[in-house]
Structure formats: structure tokens, C-alpha cells
Length: 608
Image (cartoon, rainbow, N blue to C red; front, side):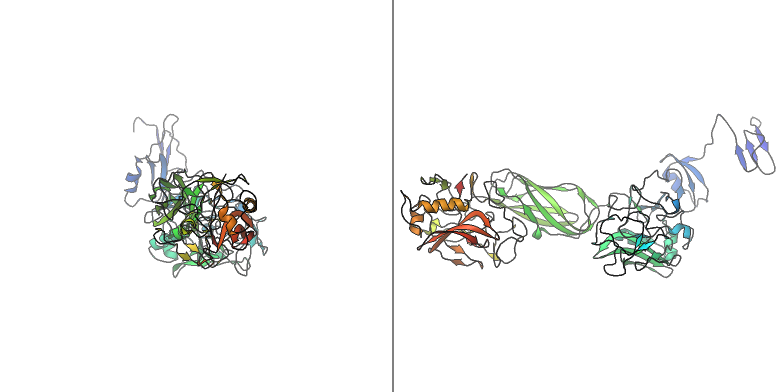
């Protein structure tokens, strides 16, 4: 002390000065040295037993000066230099401070006060801590101010044109029409009102906080690290604010039908409950973290396929969309799955996030299938598993050990080059009723997925495909059943499936395609011209270079009719809800323009 310049009075002490300031108990003065508080790590700080309010240390883990305020260590590092969404409006000019608080039970980090609050709650009825009252899904556009005007004009967009609290006294009791379920999910939610790096909590996260309280009521909410006050509510009917100091209503990002979910508590108890979206509730923001994504169901049975796969051809533009439900808004790292059954294929899902609720996952299929048949992908994502079955085409999936041979034949009259036999047949026809030449019967626009398989004669080794009465919503069904009892196997219809060698579902071998109506008409007219000159009927069909047999039809109920009596051959031409075909029998041959696409007809491929 003899070496220090010390000033002492009855009320204060000065170090480095003989005249300490009257307002300070201790006045340390220097122009060459600083004040050095106790320095310790976060772990050492947290080990301090019963710290007194105002205790100050320097945290060497975060390199911050921190003070114990009774429930949390507070300091400059806790006040984040964080920005709010562009255009955000603040009631009474109060920008909510961003101060973190951790609940050690749930391990979640939150803002320590409600959006719009000027302070952290000191009591359950602390008006300064109650903050603003938001309608679910709205941005901080001014409507959340407790004194904002009310209007009954609903918004047709995600962002409103004014700052009014929009009342909605009738169903579905929402400020937006039509409703939008995807406005507040995640930090990138369309109208997320929280500062950067924060988001609206899910119902599960709010409920976990509720369950961590010492008592399941307002007292427990205030005693928790979040210090949740009784912030009240604003009614959807007329915008009146009520219950401040007696009830609390806190939004989650979770939706359920036309309503959303919220946390409700008062002095008596607490629950998770439904709330109409036009109601004004309090908002407490949770800090961004890597929320592990999860889903409730993964529905491979309703997967929608795009593109087609063929043996020994590189997959191009092939994908499958798999629906799911019960998403929690969390992230997933994607997955890559190799095929079994038919090998050589890979299904890839890029990393991303599940939505809250229902959506679909899009898998891109790549690679070169080494055989025909069914490729199986075992999916495992978000805690759910299921198998996707994809069909790999060969020229005859019905009899892979004896596929349709590719033999060219030319009609000298038309100059067109065709395959000399029907798809699925063992040989070119020997006569009009040669069963081994009949081949398969395709529904218009479908791939060679097995639906076309028909047992034509004893010992052919082919099993006739089963039937089902459920139409497909995609271009590829994912099964080999013959679809019955409709006008088309696909709903809604797709007119662009069989046109050209690059047709979406072109069943012909590489370099071949379905003929058009005009090309079939050219063939039919050639039957009565030299050198054929055999007639406009079945005789002309079998006498022509194509040697077309009477392969019959598979009907709307899956039955086989007209076998050995009539021949009906698909074209790529569509006509309204129907498609074109060339038909012939004992009487006459003609061009058919109104064949129902649900029928199973023969296919003869034309060289491109």
C-alpha cells in the first residue's frame, strides 16, 4: 500500500487516485493499466456454487465479460448482433434484444424474451415482457402491435398490403384465403418473424419445454429458464386483446388441418391446444440448430415415376417421387441406394429438410441396368423404410429367355422398314391364326412392365398378367398388372407417351417406334396395290411384308376377345381421350381413331 497512490474517505476508496469519485465505492484510476477480473472457462464458471447476482467473471471459452443476473450469465456475447427480416416493423420503436438462454433439461437455446418485449419477465404478469401478438404465419408487418387497427378484409397473398390485424369470425378463421400451411417453418420460412438464426418452435419443442417445468402452470413457466409470462391473446373475431396477466398463448410452427398448434397455460395448468390462425398469440423464438429430421410415414406404394429404364441403356431423366407424411421440419443428409434384383442402378436423394407435415422426396435414378426385370431400392430415411420397385424394360419382359428378335422387313410400296413380328411374339406369322406370332397386348402408352403379358399357347412359358382396378397417377405404374374398368390406365391422361423413338414410354427397341395413323393407313392401302394385291382385309394383312396376324384384344375388364378373328394394332396418334389403331378382320380393314386406351392391343414397331 505504501507504493500505491491511495485515497480513502468515509464512503469510498480510490486506487491510483487520492480523490475517488463520490458515486463509487471503489474508484480504480490508471492510464497505463486495466482492471483484470477473475478469468475462467465456461466449465469452471458453471461450477461456481450459488453465484450472487452481479458476480462478474471473464469467460475464457467465449472471450467475454459476463455477469450473473440470477438465472443466466449475461454479457456482450449474449447480445447478438443479429438482423431481423427486411421490412420488419417494430411496435413503439422497440427492437427486441437478442439474448440467448439455455434450458439444460431440453438442451435447447431460446431468446430470453418474447418478440416485441422490452425486457425479460420479472413476473408472470409483467406487461413489459408480454411482447407482441402475432397472427399465425404473418410477418412483422405491424399487425402484431397490440394497438394496431383491425380489418375484416382477408389477404389473398402471403404478405398483406397494410398493418391491420385481420379479423376472421367465420371458418376457416384465417387471415389468409386460401390458406397456406408453409409460412413459419424453419429459419427460411416465408414469413419467419424471428431474427436471423432463429425460428418459430415446433409443437414438440414447445411441449418439451412445458414438460421440463417444475410445475405445469404459470409459476413453472416463469421459473423456467425461458421465464414465459402470461402474455394474453387477441381474438380472431374482432381483434380485441384480452387475458394479459391471466392467460398465455404461444404459437408453434406446427399446423393441423385448417388450424395451428399452440402452448396454453395459466395459474391452474398448461396444455398443447388448437388455435385458429387469425388469433393473435405471443411468439418466443428458438435458436437454429441441426434438427434431426424425422417423418411419420414413407409411402413407396404411391411413388410417382418419371422416365423409363431399358436394359443396357444409360438412365436419362429417370426419377421417382416418394410421398411422406408427419415431417418434423428437420434436416436429413440424403442417401444413395444401389439397386438389387436388376443391378447397375443407383437412386440418389440430395440432402435437405423435411417439411412440417406432408410432402415428397425426389430420388434421381442413374446408371446402366444390366438386365431386364424389377430393380429394387431399399429406402431408409427419416426413421422410415420401404422399397421402391422400378421396371427395367427389355423387348419382352414376359419371356426374358426368349425375347422378341429384331428382324427388319421392308414394304416395297410404302418404302417403310418394320420389325417382322409383333412385340412379344416368338416368330413372324406363318398364317393369320398362328398363336406363336400373336405376341403381347399393350395398353396405350404403357411401358413393357409386364401388363402386356399373355399366355398364348401351351408351353410358351409366359404367365398372363393379373388385373387391378386402380388407375395410375404417373407415367410408370410401378407394377405389372393390367388396369381395368376405366377408359384409360392413367389418371389424369397423358397424350405424350408413345410418340417417336424418344417417347416417354416407347416400348420398341432402340431405333424403332410406334407408327402414326398415317403410316398405318399407308400400309393398309398397299395391300390392294401390286405386288401385294390381296385385299383390304385379313388376307391382305397376312400377305403383306408385315404378315400381320389376328392377335385379338384384351378388353376393358381384362378379358380376351376376338383372338383369331380380328387384328387391332396401336398407333402413336391420339384423338381426344382416345387413341388411333389399325384394325382388320375377315370383312374389311380400316383405320380406327377412337380406341379406348385401356384396351390391350398389339404393337408392331416401325424403324425410325
